Image (cartoon, rainbow, N blue to C red; front, side, top):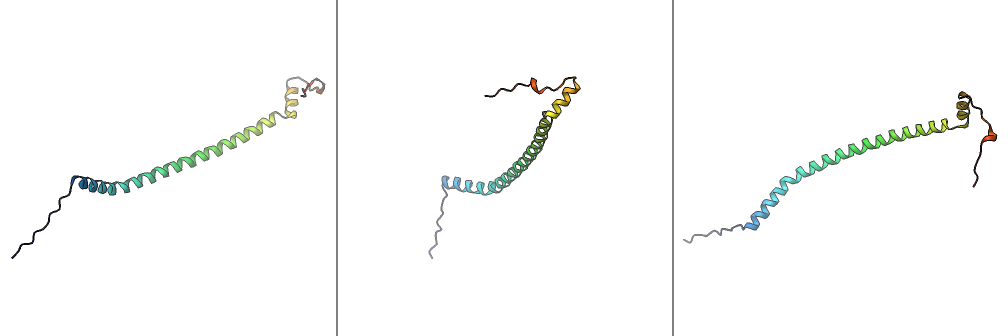
Length: 98
């Protein structure tokens, strides 16, 4: 009877390194995906908060702009002048035309 000889295949160092890297990649990939999704979610929340702050600031700016226009109106200027004991005289106003 002849004994069948089994061939033993030896794995080289490069192949061991390659397989180790592949296994490590398969283990690390899901964790990386979850981490990146969490980071993306966090950034999205921050973006929405900044957008809300921008809207709030725009409303404040608009309100202040309206108040400036109100205070700079001719009627308000005349009112303040009368409160200070001054009178409005259109002849004393000089304009510079270019």
